[in-house]
Length: 212
Image 1: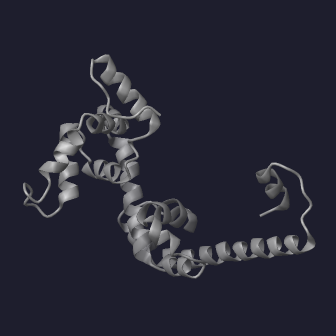
Image 2 (image 1 turned 120 degrees about the vertical axis):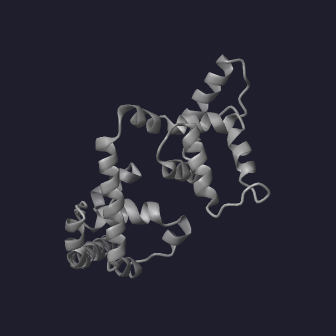
Image 3 (image 1 turned 45 degrees about the vertical axis):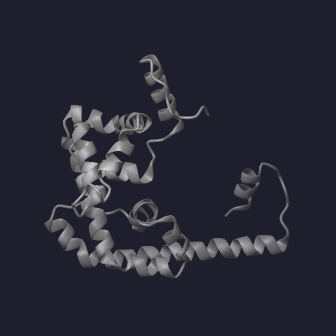
């Protein structure tokens, strides 16, 4: 990290000691080598599966960061799994061609969906967090959860089936989007809660969300 950037982050000017400058220079150089090494490994791994990607008309990734930083590390791993990673384990992951294949499949499907999804479906996906927030506030999500307890449910893919049911209610084709939203609970944002409370209050109903 450059000294000027550190100064900017800290919000005040300072003059680092020669030892600190040397340590930061070494750290910066080590990270550059880390990224360069990862890119070299990634290109070799990509080369082994490139013919498969082209054969299946799948999108090719730009670089290792697009696959691992922007997707695999942030979306495929849990917080606990990410905490166990270090400079040695990440290069080993980059050697796994299955990760690239999965990224290419999911990314290509996402692009196809954005290009060919009808406008009304796009709007439904856009409003999904808002709809889930209302269902949560009304206790409907808890009611559906109760229906999928062992007492009532005899299937084998509980979370997937629950998401499919909610997707059907909301007229959404992609149950996986609902499953991920329920898993991450990212629909319970301050804005979504505020809008939900306003809608329910306008209809004469009391919201269960606390005032922020």
